[in-house]
Image 1 (tube, rainbow over the protein chains, first blue to last red):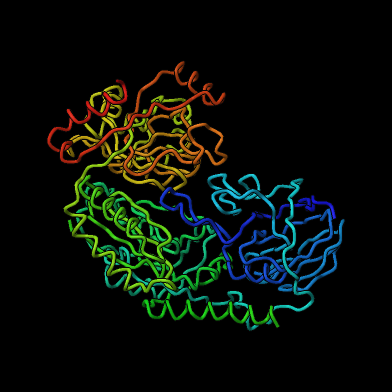
Image 2: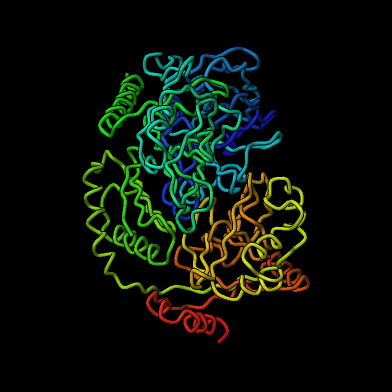
Length: 330
Length: 289
């Protein structure tokens, strides 16, 4: 096989980026971790095609791309429910399948969730920047030329490492259920929680919020709940005049800021690393993947949990990975 | 100063050294983050100093959250008594104040501003009691600025001017954030200055633009091989330049011939508090000497 295996982007979809498990270690310089919004789906897709967990794949949101392969390849598509097609013939999701040189990979319409992950045996071969192939589009860094894919791009594929698990789909019970009716996001109150009144502390967790159209890799905005009331205070020097302002601080991944007390924003993998808005708490690590599968207008409720519950949920997600490993090995 | 600790979910600890901004709070935060870094506690993945607070990201599968919290609190007493002196750099940043690009942008977003009839510079000069924009610009570039945080987006410095609190420039942010800010805009919000490292959304008042890149995702500029110029603790001197100098500097940047003027300096908070103007004069001397 030629050493220039690649695919050409026939149609880029809405926003399709190269992502791996991210680029930790530079948040103190404002460079966020990036990487797949739904990490479990990336790991699953990689394991299906025989890649290491952290190999780079493609993440596409709402609308799949059309890709034409220059060489034979093995592909798996996980994440949102959006049927993969080879030259128009539907293929199973959450399963590895062969692609022949010259074939076109395209996608049906989005049925559930928000983001698919496409893994190719060998991984997407773009240069590593600061230890990762993930795209940080806001800073024009990493991935394919620091940006989402465009029609006409030719993207290289690496050399396959291990055997693929062909023909068997990851069982439903191992996958995370795509968010449907009312999604619950578990969050630990904290950070600047004391800035809002007891009534607002209750209403924040009681109210049903809806995902706003402004929802992307940087953060997800929510609206529809009651505005939050602040505990009166004289604003500290340097904080700014609005009661929702603080002296600019770091923002945890998953932190929930509420500018002006009106619309919560949960920061995600391409987070802005800091700023001057107070935060009511932080979505727990176990629920971060889930956010990446939320569609605009979906109803969401936040549920208050403590550290023990957060760690138990984290452990449950680890067990999901163990079940995935057993399935791949079996 | 009252230090406050909080978990940010199951992967972060957030430490607010003080509610309000001061160099004392910054130095205590910096001292604590240095101690955390030196301790090499297993499980810590990110250490992020901010203006008057900091944040540690950790892996709770490696270290129990309560254990890490207890470890962090141990660093507080030592940080209070730590010597507030750092070896750092002073970096000169040329600025074209009142430039055509931020002017075009601020006019485009005028309905989001407190004073739709003027410019950001006119507004900032007036509410800070300056008799003219020229006097305001003279104050803005008249004393050096301390980089008290790097972040928001990649490589963006938050800056805090090295003057007594009574002389600090304070301006509100835009009523609603802009969806666009020219790359390398020199801005101000609250008591903080900033330099926008990339083009994008922003809410700070816009005063001018520098021709000197501070973030280079491709690492092509000779002085930006590490991609980022600034780190917390750096000192910036803004230098007002005219349009011909701006154009010449930009041409040098584009030809890869530009390197910023940088000098190694020592900054002592006690020395600064005792004699701000004398301390600043020494800093600038290191640059001009």
